[in-house]
Length: 281
Ligand code: HEC
Image (cartoon, rainbow, N blue to C red; front, side):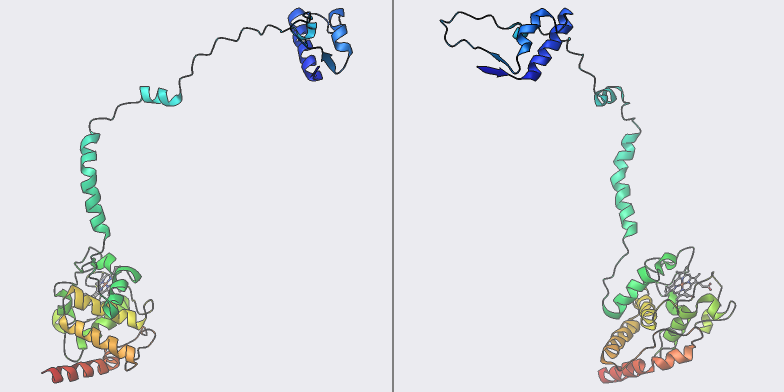
């Protein structure tokens, strides 16, 4: 005995009605549908007389499957067959791309001298913290926004001298900028003839940098851009004295700081420097 679930019978009935137009309640169905669940005797042996399958189970010829639809043309195939070829003028552009990329990357990299200690701190201030490089150029070569300060130019304005006058003048200048110095007022070595506003306007950095950062960037410009050996020596001695506590710097320079005050502050460094020079000589 095989149980035929009711839903299958129901489906068969509906199908039949659809194909023949016969009423499901008609006499042909009556016998098969009366019992639920319907059961069908399956022949036990081949010898048994073939029993006619109940009508409901008669295989309903499936309607002919619809012809397979035309395989749709995928949008990417359409795109591939209809798109325009790469125009010829692109070729030289592609050829030059790597060269352009190389040049471009070259302009992004700041030429790092790999300075450490106080000069390294100065380099960071010059390139990042205060972005002096944006106006004076990565190598101090100058731009339309700031004058050249390398290749000895800076040392003409703020000379190297044994008592640190030029250094103190430069520190005061960077701390005060054009307006803090006063447009039209001289700064640096008088022989150079610089007056505030001669080139443009530079901001004051005394309030945005610590005094150590400001001194560091000034020494960096002198030692690296202008290759001043005295500045390199000063940086090394100052670094030692800061570490040992022999030199203590204020948090920041006041807006009205004077060259004399800075010279006084750095006097121990220069005294130390002269002692060392005397020992060496
Ligand atoms: C926005 C542009 C700009 C930035 C940023 C800038 N400067 Fe200047 N700098 C100038 C200009 C302009 C002058 C000339 C000032 C004038 O004409 O009054 C100048 C002058 C100088 C001078 C004097 C050069 C000379 O020979 O007279 C030094 C030194 C200097 N800057 C250092 C620095 C340092 C250090 C920084 C970063 C802490 C810095 N500058 C950031 C524009 C800039």
